[in-house]
Image (cartoon, rainbow, N blue to C red; front, side, top):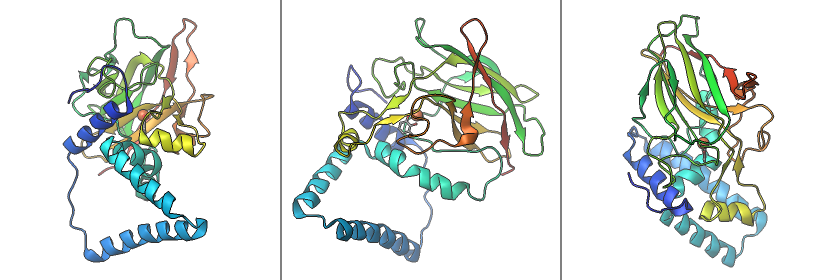
Length: 281
Ligand code: MBD
Ligand code: FE
């Protein structure tokens, strides 16, 4: 995958997110005509009822069509759908699940990040900005058994809110890694405090948000997928107590169980612990 611009643009990150999505292995399942009919009918009924309720005009209908075309051309379907729709898919999926809370994946996961030992520093630039952050904990089964050899696949924005792989000025693999837990299931990851993430304002998703008078921000967060053999992987995010936009995440992906409260260690380094509990697959 290549970044297509020399400074971050909506079109550049959109193209990369669309390419990342296409490259991922998405399960193809057989879906019955009955289910397709029921779900698509429900979606269309929602659209029809909004049109009736708000007496949508022809110019508005044509503007919507032009906007939808732009979302596709700008590669922003992963961004738009993960920001405005994924949280509800995650909500219905997690209803029957046990173990630590999950939340949405988002558009900026990349597979095959650098493998790292249980005590590790995420790959970062020599002059990486941002407050040093140590994130440590343990992975266990829900019965309390420590899970050695579990993987913490972690990725995050930098102190300016950009993700490597989706912003051309960042080195490949920056602030991404796959940490393996020790025999006691423990890990300790050194990184930096990420900044809040702003939906690019120069693309169609950002233009819609501006036109509607909404704000384009997600609170600062770490992304994680925690995996262990024989267990259901957890896709989650962790946020920071007192951070901006915690109560108004544009992607509605914050849950109270996912908020860290890192403490200053007296040397300008923040430290937080968080344990993960996985249910058997
Ligand atoms: C992000 O960083 C993110 O995590 C989500 C869910 C959507 C857009 C950008
Ligand atoms: Fe994110």
